[in-house]
Length: 316
Ligand SMILES: [Fe+2]
Ligand SMILES: [Fe+2]
Image 1 (cartoon, rainbow, N blue to C red):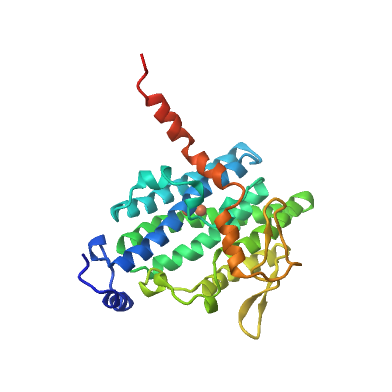
Image 2 (tube, protein in one colour):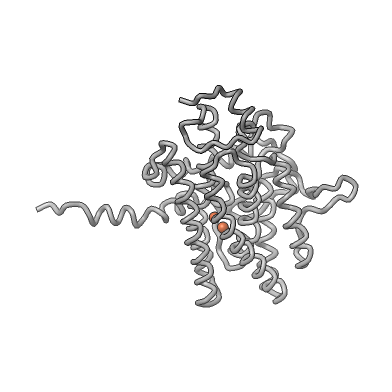
């Protein structure tokens, strides 16, 4: 039992207090941290099969090895987050192997097929950049000490993934022709996908446990701005078109498409022409999950089942 009330703990963490053990957590704090860590762990885990799918299109042995190194990092990151959840009394085995695919908490973007090298490196450039944006904010601001320390390693490795993405986006764009067209097609569906990843706009989000318990420092809209402030100039410099621009007057990045809007996962196409839709419709699409949800979850569990079958005692 925590020695703090909910109000006391909210006040203390905003004065800089760092919790070091689950014993100090109030129920509200614990719940908010579990949600945050589950999203983090599941995102890291599911990025592995998504990147693996795209890595099949690696142009050479050494580039395949770089992709596999990234996949290995992601699995280690997932393990770190599940391990912290385990310290909080959750069952890691159940979390990884006992849930239905739709119960995983990774973003809708990682339910999509990554089908080419161009899509892999754009995922590194966009999705890993989103990961760094979110996690570096957690690292700077979290009131949970064990998570803060664990994120040092994660952040270093994510920087490598991001660099891999950006270097390759530059190469493909400089190559021009079909390589650049493929890259532009990846940017076309992955840019709005990452924008949507950051969630509800601030004016619609009334209550935020993660901010109240100081599990993060920036709001959804602030995080979206941080991501765009790196991604839009990168794409501009590579001659890649993105539906957003910097507005000098407000000092903010502004979207040039109706947000949120509907997405056709089969065609990998955002329906800008269909205009803005209510967030309820986005949540319904997220809840239904995307086309690769079951395949990716099965893919990280397959060897576990095979092993269990092999270990079954033989019936005489
Ligand atoms: Fe990661
Ligand atoms: Fe990563």
